[in-house]
Image (tube, rainbow, N blue to C red):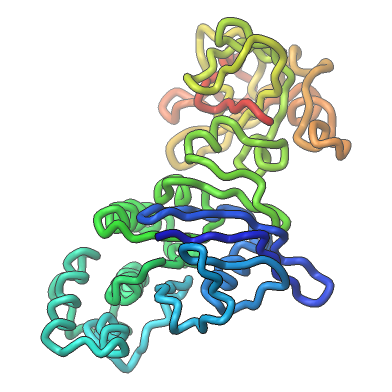
Length: 363
């Protein structure tokens, strides 16, 4: 069993919200639709659910066109950002709602509710009022409710975005385990990179209404298909480089490329994330710290680097042909990271080295 989108387009008047989307989700697969706010990803999910009517193309299940199938007949489960629980029902009543609608007898429904609450970490919560639950607990109830009727496809629209970071990270891990345990075919919409890569077997990157790249998370992260995709995935700087023997050399130094990233020897375009340069006593690049900002688990530095002030260094805008500012950060300045414990202060000299885990090969 599989979901198939064939040339799916959605329009609002003259505005194209989704353009010619092509995507297949296999039985038991989790696909994350990842993109910035306003790119059309929630509209695409709503079209799959039957809540939006396509202007062109089809939504299919096992090659059967679902155009004439209403929302409640598609057998899909939906979870939205706010969960949309029934405040007048307790936890068990919320989870059992879909089972009651399907005509499941009371005993079987109660057994299924108990099973699912155990799976989402809420065993014994049956009689709790949903209004007394935390945000994370409410989303767990919403997930259990959506899974209760054993949907053939689960649709999740930013299900964790309303939660604080620590809770969101933990619930993403728990949700990934739950989806794999239940082998639930899932399409999840998110703008959060970590959430997408935690949950998904494949990631589909979407910008401006179009699917730009689809692939396994590690491949998309290491090999973004274009400067636009690279920019969304956190590559703030693009640099021409020469690859020889799996090592890329650019104006900022050399870096061994990760397995599966290095192709044939020759010229490539490197995408540098904010963590690409790190303080390293053995680093090839020298400079002076201009600014220091503490983050949660590292220190972010702005470093004046004479070697970066010349040509051959471009911002994302330059590489995409839109005329960005020349130079890394402008004026020969680069971003770098350091350990919290021994971070240098403004005015200190530093040596920097490129790190493979902060570098991608673009396009």
